[in-house]
Image 1 (cartoon, one colour):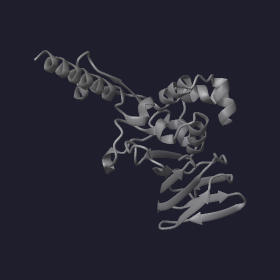
Image 2: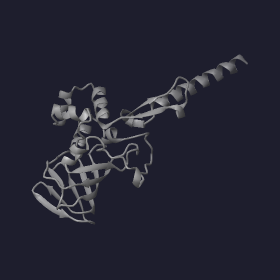
Image 3: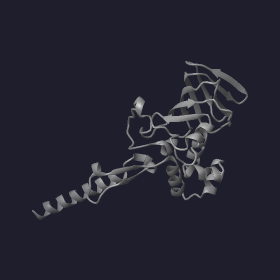
Image 4: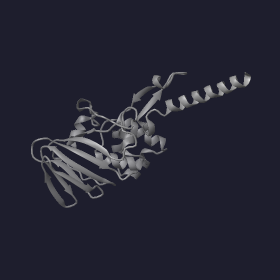
Length: 236
């Protein structure tokens, strides 16, 4: 009888340890995007997930790697001042900088962009797309586009799909980073330059290119454009 009681106690302890481990693993590999807090003795369902802003996620990832702003600047090629603005949510980095930040921090873009708990499948309804550029909107519009993640809760994703709204702007900055990009035009017209080659794309047109080449995607004309952009940052 005593042996049975001891066995049950050990089993219960194992279950408690397993539950605690599950609570700390909420969010899967994207644990940097949110903090999980559970009251003592609470189960997994009682865990509370606190969303983090993009700037906070980047700062937490940098600090977890033990990097200073100067270290991250040297790794990513982004100025210290620019990184400070990003981490304080005064500006949202363009997509090319996000790719470089992910590589500099030795993690996928998904670590920085994910929201909520990681899932094996992610459905994003039309009226519930999270706008990555929800902070510092004016600064985002200076770049000429606002991007919305189309798979924020898919675990271990290898691609990053976005709905991008491009607006007319004089601002233009070439970007280059590891990986490849695919663009499909939904509305309006866009101008894509890869190296010295320039293409004008209209609804239904698409383009696929190596993003290691300097490239620039802009709205063409005076009307906004919408595109689907899929980025593979070259990280498996």
